[in-house]
Length: 114
Length: 192
Image (cartoon, helix red, strand yellow):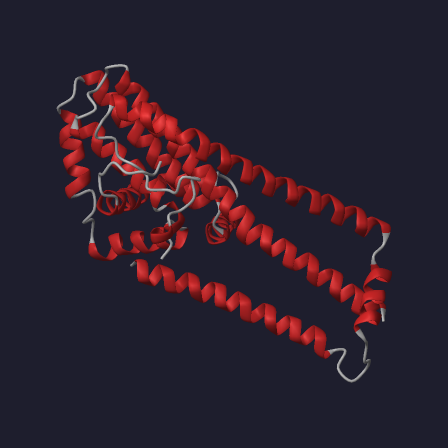
């Protein structure tokens, strides 16, 4: 059953990827034979299309993404610092304490990712 | 020329959005689910530390192992897998809630009434947390939910779905728990 689940999910992701490639190719093919642009021209065109509102939206999105990543990193650091002490305290009470087998940062173990 | 610029900005935005949706949102949900289970595990430990149930009681130990198994393999839990379990139950009949789950039920029955009630409550909370996690982030579930909602606008479909399929849903959860029991060796390790 896990095999079916894994293959189904793989199929969905692959299908989505194929769709993305298809639409990206379609979008680019619209320009085929019409214009030949140097990278600098593409850069200029890109900058020209960036309006003030787009800059503002991207700034908010970029800052939010950066802050989120920082929070994740801080959380993992806190787990790494606090969990050994907690574990020692718990083992003193319960010597047969079982574990979740996550990594010291609280992420999925390497061997469990397969 | 400005079309190229628009195509580029749209492409970058979509890539960014995909990253947030498929990596950020997914991992954030996973972390939240694991944290909910850690909270339950800590609460269970606290309950045992207060002397309500012995740490070496099989009922306590197996419940903790089950929670650990679910934390460990949370990244593999999906609505599709859950649906497959439900289909398997429908086709092959209920072969879950056997071995480990039944053994746990038997061990819980040996406890004094207040501990028994409390441990069963923890077990229910674990099941509810799993069900919420599996259904809340699945586009497929949302589609099914919307479809059923169109069919009957008068009552809350979520409740109807859960009431109609409650036995199957809980069998599905039991199956996932069964996997957690099987997969997580009850060993003390260096990890958290």
